[in-house]
Length: 228
Length: 254
Image (tube, rainbow over all chains, first blue to last red; front, side):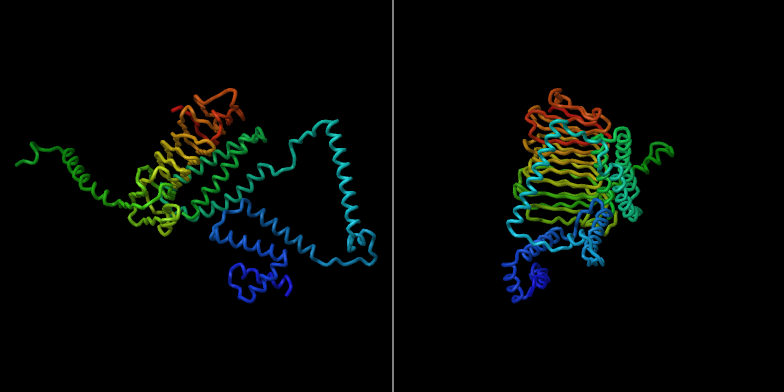
């Protein structure tokens, strides 16, 4: 049996439902195969975590973005697994990229040595430049997720939980409805205030902190009341 | 025998009738509420968790190795199902009453437990009072409106948060402890002994932070136009974070 066949048995092995014979064979294989051992360990960690959480998990901060990333990864993997068709007259770049390389230990050591020398020279040159010219000025508009974009992403999540709350709201007492609306208003006011401050001073850390806090508070409040 | 000395006026008659009705109605109001009391054996370092829906929670300490739970319920259909766990006692009113669909009503709790207990209290609205608890953790969280009062609290981890309502803490900060207070719109007041040492990050977006006698020009600084104060008091070994969206933050010396 090869690794693929043994890995099929891992799930039952972790659950403890494997037959004694299969269990013995798998354990023998695991004792000599680090890859399958790692896979088994990973699976066990995941299963233990799921059991520990008992099916209750915190919502992902940005569900849509996460699914997008997963979908991109799957597409990328699918793309890479597709067989590359060689052109009729392959150029030198194609031949280099699709050639199977085999190097001896001395050759490998020479390559590593060359890389170390190049990196050392590059670093030395960089440090010298820094010493002569002074530190690099950080551009204010460095690429990062802008606060307004984060705000927009969280607003999407808030809209989702708001819908869940609205489904139940009719069953609440008038007093609870008033209390809830008033408290959401308090949090909304904090969000609005922070956004105004950030319009005046886009890099004010206090306003950013309050905005993040307030948005997280609102999501948590909506989640709490979504099943009330 | 005459019931009235003279001809009574209509106002007097109405007053008498209302008085009688109020006297008759009072017991029925009392009967509408249900009182539940129970005691549970506990060690000295017990952990008590309570998740209420609405109502007041009062936690006090005593010198017995047991937890006494007294609950006064508005809705007689509401269920209280305390669970004894390895570490202590858990009461989850939200989970126990999912079938009532938002009509659990007020449940007012009075809890008595050993002083070294940890308490984790939560309610959707209502007041939380914690007196003299000295365990590892004291957490009081009100999802919406309600005041939090912590008196004589001496725990290494304290968390108090609400959206609308005041937070009052009178206690001590343990060296190395963590203390977080957060409100949306209410006054956060901390009353501490002069010997208290802590590092503070206090944030109020309306710039109303008063460090009182704990202010120190050399060791504290104002940030963002005075909307945040950071710095050390004494040895600075406890970590204190206070956030208030639209309310005041005040420090007092005990």
